[in-house]
Length: 254
Image 1: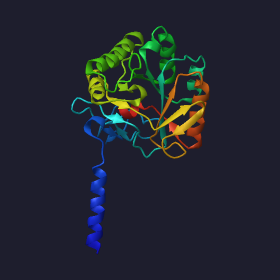
Image 2: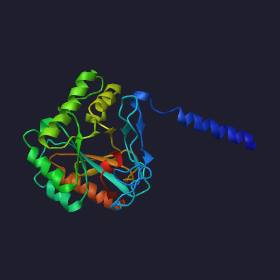
Image 3: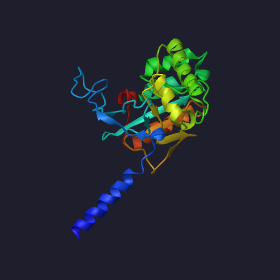
Image 4: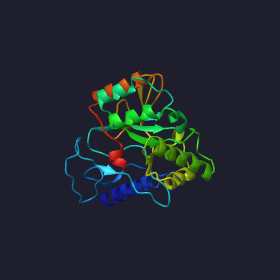
């Protein structure tokens, strides 16, 4: 009877493993232990990580495709904030970020940044935020030819390098839509990972993909909108309520 039970359990695990995504839709948590930002197995640092221990890094680029990461695997009470687009330049955004220290990734579109470089550069320089690539014009990339996608991603990164002095290595596909060409194009443009999300903030409310609270490792999406202050405040309060500390996503995906 025990032998029969063991066989049933093994079969169930095998069935679960077979439900993984196909290669062009591969998603990961994270892998490869990483004791501190910029370090690798066996490396040492001159100072401890200010937020505790960095648990893991993103998977490597394989077969010419960047990995897709939706959340971070960590046993620490960490949560990660990301801000998209850049359409509305809220004058109070800098002060809010300085007061709360959320270390967001700004996934920006060149069409919104051009002519407003000083606004975003000030935020990047003063808050510890990370610059991310979100394409030039925010198109739905899925189903588009490789060259179209490559140009959207590469031109965004190239322009930021010239205008902001930083070339991003984290990428977010507009609308969260992507295909195999997207992952290949992102890799060709020097991106390390495509970042999705597990929760979003809209109209001053945090919306969860599962459950009713933020969990360690969640990646949260918000936008530069007219409701920036309400959305940002909602994230900060929810993270505090759930006992989580916002930390730099780049430290886990660099």
